[in-house]
Amino acid sequence: MNIMMPFAGWTALISGICALLNFTFFPHFTLSLYSFAGLALVNAIIFIAGDWSNLKKALKSRQTLYGMNATVLVLVVSGVLVFSNLLVFRHKVQLDYTETGMFTIAPQSAKILKGLEQDVKLIGFFTGMDLSRDHFKHLMSTFSAESDHIKFELIDPDRNPALVEKRGITTYSSVVVESGEKSTIVKILNEENLTNAILQVSNKNRKKVYFLEGHGEPDIESEEKNGYSKAREALEQDGFEVDKVLLAQTAKVPEDADLLIINGPKNIIPRVEQEVIESYLNQGGSVLMMLDPQEEPGTGSFLRRWGIELQDDVIVDPLSRLYGSDFFAPIIKEYGKHGITNNFGTATIFPLLRSVSKTEADGVDTQEFLFSGAGSWAESDYRSEKIQLEEGKDRKGPVPVAVASTKTISGNKTSDSNEDSSTQPETVNAHLVMIGDSDFANNQYLNLYGNKDFFSNSAAWLMEEEDLISIRPKERKSSPLALTDVQGKLIFAVGNIMIPGVALLIGFRIWLKRRRL
Image (tube, rainbow, N blue to C red; front, side):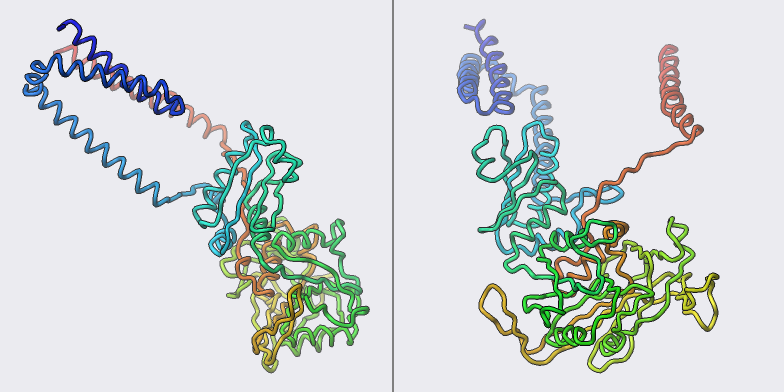
């Protein structure tokens, strides 16, 4: 009997370890798990019952007491570690040390997610070997931390062909975003596209933007470098509907218009059309005007009634050469305190820019919010062959180049939409933003520096869509470490010769010291 006791004890120990490994790595193999656990329990009972007297003596020995104390100490430390892990799990804190904050979602995304009032489900169609799968899971964990309304699911398209066909999936790594009866498909996986898709399906009413045409304005359908197709796409990505309007035919701004954009007209806007635009503003409308230098569409009197003075000059900034730009293509980094530029620290570039300043107008609150650099000036004699700052004639920087006007309108504003006509509050605000250049938002320049953010923020502020006024998600930036030949050799010497050499010397010293003992 005594010979069987060690065998039972070792069998219990080995079976218990096998049960633990089975539970950790193969929990779905329940039969083997229960078998190992049962074998361990039976042999442990046999071992304890058959060798109880020896166990009792061993438990009272000094060595056992020391061992038990050590075991208790280990359990206490383990308990502290487990409790710490539970705290970290429940209160997530993420530190992002990347240069561009790649693993931190943009403020725009965070604001939209926190403002969700209904559940949004994102279904990712990724194969098991798809590298984008982990990126999607990371984005979803970050999104879920911002809002409890975010739900997500992963589906392997190769194993679920029927569901792929039902959802209309045509490419791998696609994501279906749905909320209620609305749904859309994201084919290029990144934070910006997912955020815009969430905004699109969660918005109950989509606002509408109209671009004025008929005066030589860049076409929003044109993909040429001077076209505005990318600006249209940017607005659509933010969840807005975009269309064109020819006032010469309609004789009024469409009633469903939430914003009218006048982008760089080359010809004069007739007075009749200006009256239509002003009538739209006086009903609480919003207008974004972008007028290029050397172009005069005849809107001077109209703008002055709204507290805006358009100057006949061109901004010159010699410091722009430091950024690879041109004297006449200033890079703007000076922003006033305004809803459009709050927390906006990204530079913007304007190919050819004129100054715009505020002036007194009854009942209009006007604010300058975009300024050229301190080393710039507004060149009034820009047609001259020699361009230089003339004291007393040219305005020295900072020079205002964008102005926002707000006017409080008394009375009711009635709007017709897909729903029944509704009467808005008796007091509404009319907004007019004037920018001294339109080329910054064309296809050639929109994606440079912060141009797209500035254009999108301007449109969002005019339509009172504060959730969209923020910095857009960041792109991954390549930051290679470039070392000189001397730096490379120094790092090699320190890492491969000096540090190992010091360790060897210390070891040799200790060996000599012990040898003499």
